[in-house]
Amino acid sequence: MTTPSSPAKFRRARPRRTDGWAVTASPVSEGASAGQAYRLSRIQAEGWNAAHRVGANTLDTLDATQIESINPYASDPERTRWRAGFRSALSS
Figure 1 (cartoon, helix red, strand yellow):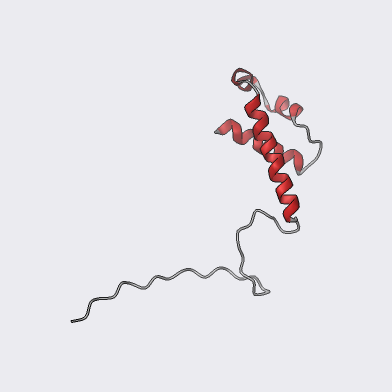
Figure 2 (cartoon, helix red, strand yellow):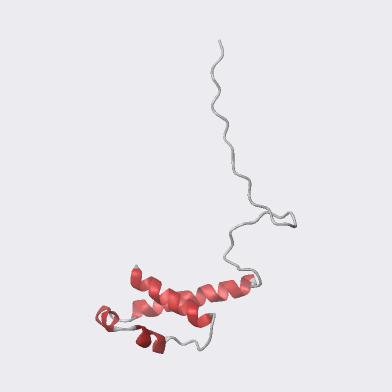
């Protein structure tokens, strides 16, 4: 008597780049170094922390212009990442 075998499990193949290396999800965008990606993640965390330091009553009255005025960064990509962290804290 033979027992039926379990169905075979198949994993989807990872997409391949033209140079043969597998494409993997990475927080590092093309052209950016791992150090730069880490630095930007820390800046985003600074924005998140800044939102948590502001009192709840004050957060309710802040508009986009006021939030931009407390952003300590003058240029992108730092300014954008800080803003993303701040907004992330507001939505959580």
